[in-house]
Image 1 (cartoon, helix red, strand yellow):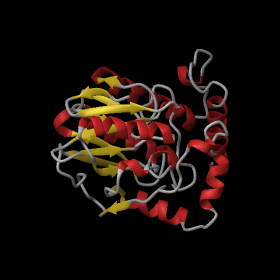
Image 2 (image 1 turned 60 degrees about the vertical axis):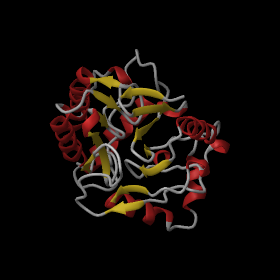
Image 3 (image 1 turned 30 degrees about the vertical axis):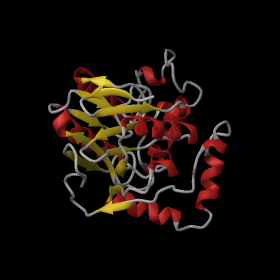
Image 4 (image 1 turned 90 degrees about the horizontal axis):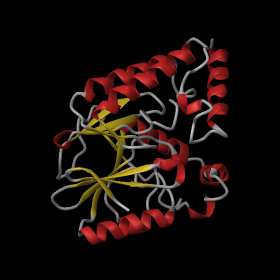
Length: 270
């Protein structure tokens, strides 16, 4: 079910990891950002768009992780964009004939049969330094950085005051660093937070890749929370972060393990 969060901007949340698909209405149709995870939910999204009389005219994946690269046949054959580095990373990973089979093994068993992989990652990389998504609708600024994944992009829907943060600024997930494809994951993450902080004054609504929608007051609060967590990782400290504490309401059976793994991998780098 679509929920309106600003003029011409709607969100559909998946049951899987509280993933948020973002719909931006334009003149001839919609821009669909990170379209969702499960087959039946994307079909439901397609139904909602049919009711609106709005076809998908463009798609965008914020980064090259499988749950942001999916698509459904009913969403049509519109161009699906990503940053140049995001698209190149996807192509390189999918060039391995066994990539999809290995990915299928990583998907949680309870939803494995509900994930449509046939159209996974069919992205067109936008030329490097592209400032905005090319489409006939509200201006959408690309804020590219190298935190979390290669070619990760947050998006600022400028005329609507909406910041789509990709896999950052979540109220349920701790910052997940890219510990494979970058020389300095801590500084990359802090630099990305500074970029988001620079855009925060233009936004009234925050849509993270996973978790709850936030208002203007939440944007800076979540930036500070993420920055504090990354400082804890840098200093090998103990986090005072409710997302991995005893009061956590999401991921309490696996997020503490992710935190420990990040500490261990960073210690090895040192």
